[in-house]
Amino acid sequence: MDIKPIRNEKDYDAMLARIEILFDAEPGTTESDELDVLFLIVEDYESKRYPMEPLDPIDFIKCTMELRGEGQKGLSELLNSRSRASEILNRKRPLTLDQIRKIAKAWNVPAEAMIREYELSA
Image 1 (cartoon, rainbow, N blue to C red):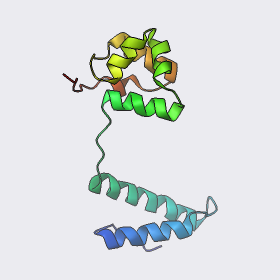
Image 2 (image 1 turned 60 degrees about the horizontal axis):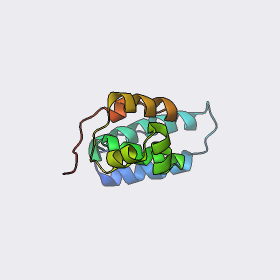
Image 3 (image 1 turned 30 degrees about the vertical axis):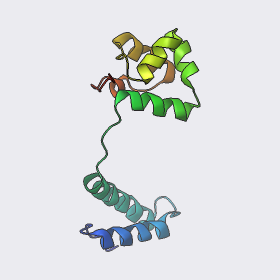
Image 4 (image 1 turned 120 degrees about the vertical axis):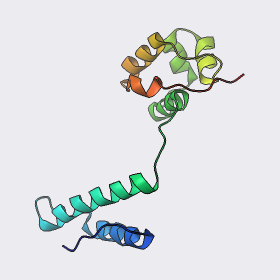
């Protein structure tokens, strides 16, 4: 196991190729240990090279709705108001703490993802 840090895209591509080779390694083997270490190195490199900003609260809600197969109707029912759901999704009205709590509890998502400030449309 000759593991080196990733210094450039060539190193990154080589490490991804090695991960692909080791991907089905049996747990508890030397290859599996190497795979674990390579994953950590790649994850660190990607987080520094390709940082991702967290979604703003409305984009988070829209993404959650899509992943859950929910439409605006699902949010409307949760908030007991079709117009309120529309205003929130169209950034006409900010989320309230009560709404954030309802969404977090009903959809089992972190409330923290919806607490950040975001822009409302005019």
